[in-house]
Image (spheres, rainbow, N blue to C red):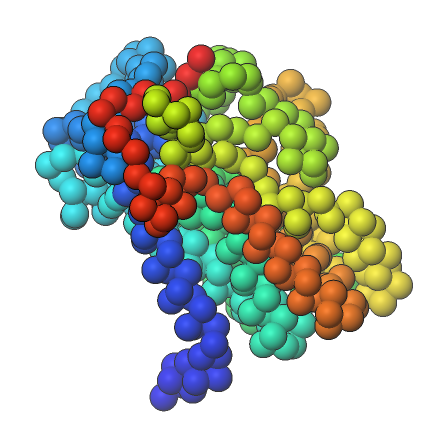
Amino acid sequence: MKIFKVLREHRIMFIVLIGFLVIDVFLLGVPNFGVYDEAIYVPVAYNMMSLKPQPAKPTILGNPVTLGTPLNLSGWYPKQPFGKDFSVEQPPLAKLIIGAFLYTFAPDTVNYFWARVPSVIMSIIALVSMYGIAFSLFESKRWALLSMVFLNFDTLFWVHSRIALLDIYGLAFMMLGTLLYLRNRMHLSAVCFALSILSKLTGVFGFIGILIYHLLSHHDKANIKRVFASMGICAIVCVVVYTVYSWFWGMDQNPIANFMLYVTWMKGVNWTFTLVQGSSPVSQPWAWLFNDAAVRYAQIFDPATGIPLVSIWGRLNPALIFLTVPVFAYTGYEMIKQRKPVNALPFVWFMATWLPWFFLTLSGAEQFIHHMVGVIPAVVLGVVAWLRTQSRVFQAGFSMFVFAAWAWSYPYMFLWLYVTGARYALPHINFFFGN
């Protein structure tokens, strides 16, 4: 069978992927309480499934944890009708997927492990898609594997692969859509981009990017018609799914009225508040290229020693992100000079998913570094395209540097204490989640 042939041909990729999966699931339930916007989406997912579970008892390493400044949903959402999605500021698909897992596996007690399992699945889809995209571009299993490994060891991708936020859903469907496009499945690709948009609105940036890339690669009228056909398919899928969602889970059954609730919310919301201890994580797109204004998703200290046991930050792997400017200067030059997809796709993807944030900034919208999730694959592809031109010694050294930079910013600091046996007595740990 064809599937067994693919498994044999790419067996190293699948072995590495299984290893990543094991690592992802390990400590997936740590912490067993909401990290950052999980405190919104998990209660919303339970509410959409018409479930009223018992609250979880926060613990870490078997010891109780005191939550500081817990998020008060009633202050954010004055009206919370049972069975409805009252979190109208985000598209519905990812919340529905989270809710389906909670309904199936954890209906009685709030369980963040099962809320995060779909994120792991989405990360696997993203990694397989990255392998396929890189294999199509570089025509080499070696560089495809390295691209997948680099993506996995980006710190921001790593964290979002392990928490119940919506970004990884939008990214996974976006990357799958890109892979299908490269495999000449443009209409099916449009469906995946629609699912990306229905998970996180930023998926539209990826769709625009692939359409621009298509128009740059094909200039005849037939392919221009294919672009309009893809746009139509994407729009139809979005409208149909959103209409069904509005009927069953929306605050209003009328999809137009339901969408206007979103518009009203976005106009009235004030993003200047922050749930992050210390300082506001608000930043601008140019600052993301320097890992500036990282978002602290959660931090737990041992009160006796002050050692951070869990320190989860939204930031990127410095070994990758600091190369963005020179790498895309290189890929942009090579794209104009050689007009090869190996340089054109990363460059167009980067510009389509990063530049729009400038226009949003000019409109007064405040930005956060985790919006870079959709840009990371383009950065990885650009870095790998450049790395292919270097010596083998440099390639090996840089690959180790990427892993070392990830390990340096690893979010679960207490793991090293746990592994070495230096476990502390933790009778009452304070969890800092706010000012």
